[in-house]
Image (cartoon, rainbow, N blue to C red):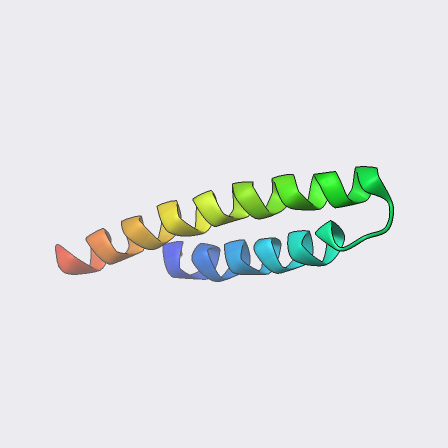
Length: 56
């Protein structure tokens, strides 16, 4: 489940990246925030995925 969540987090980052390129400053700002949050979530979930597979 964590691996699926990691992939979804990367999609979240991609959508944020598209939003960050918007001409609308509010949308662009929200996109940057989504990229930052999504990157943290992807790293967090990826680390936990790696750790859960290493302990099996």
